[in-house]
Amino acid sequence: VRRDRYFSRHARWCGMTRLVLATGNAGKLKELQALLADSGVEVLSQKVFDVPDADETGLSFVENAILKARHAARLTGLPALADDSGLVVDVLLGAPGIYSARYAADPVTGEPAGDAANNAKLIAAMAEFPADTPRTARFVCVLAFVRHADDPLPVLCQAVWEGEIASALSGAGGFGYDPLFVVPGEGMTSAELPRERKAQLSHRGQALLQLMARWGETGL
Image (cartoon, rainbow, N blue to C red; front, side, top):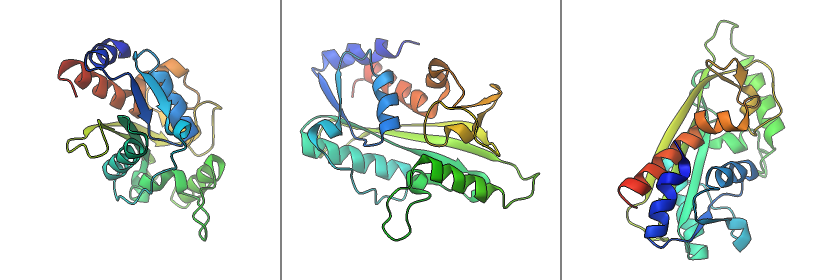
């Protein structure tokens, strides 16, 4: 399914020519810009407008996605698309969850420690369990689109990508927890997948397809 077929048709029809992506995460920004490359809409990072990251005070992916979208729309005056996503590990009772990017954050300052530290913490946490413990997990993505900051009806699209947690890092592609996320049926981690294949399978790619389908079929 071509991603641009739905998106560009209605985006042009409704007159939207610019869209701000409400993320400061370089990995997410790169993926979303690539997925929207054929949209016919100019896709801009919130960094272009010097928009600081929103305070993610919600307790769910949905709440935080809406918070980020409204924040970017309010400070730019543009329609905004926000992504809130993370890794949910069953044996860790859903952790790192909404705190995925800050899993190994400094306990005093709260500053994120980066992908390497997050992955190391996850490996250590999983090592605490017996070897036969199920290592099931899933990536979750919620996209929130708002036409303006006070939009009373945000468009929400949610997708999950099921997998398992590896015991060691493997692969140099992607970002975040990709080197630890084993993809069923592929025999490799998401960090080892070709970019096009990852776009087909991933939580973010699937959520974006939902958004584009709604855009083209019913309008937003």
